[in-house]
Length: 198
Image (cartoon, rainbow, N blue to C red; front, side, top):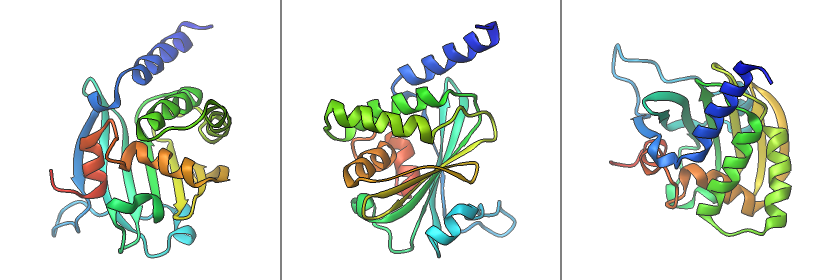
């Protein structure tokens, strides 16, 4: 293994071993920009058909010792209710600023899902296989998007290309709960995404 690959693996291991709450910092939520202010990001193309009329609910940045790891953006319908995130349509976009291995992202996702709710080891292994397919290695500028249909249907996209799909209400609640559930290990990021007062 080359020194560069070893360094990337070590960084990825460090990022994935620390509690996410140590890395989460809020960014501004998503009110309409003031005159002359930054423009609201455009709805990702893959969400235009899946989530028509969606609005940017909020955004936040995940940091590691002050370095940006990714920016998260939550797209929802206007009637979205944070208390019932698992029963509503939404799109969550992660725009990466660091190189990370997809397998490590998948494994960390399983660990974070356990904070939100219980599931069996058999389910964990099935979901891990799915997420290793869904999440390729990422580099700065790459974008992962998860879409939920509000009834348990989930699709994943990598830079606009669909990578995986499943229908499992428990998985949907636990996966999106990493960011949106009260049990999230990143409460500041959750507040920013949901547009809740600090």
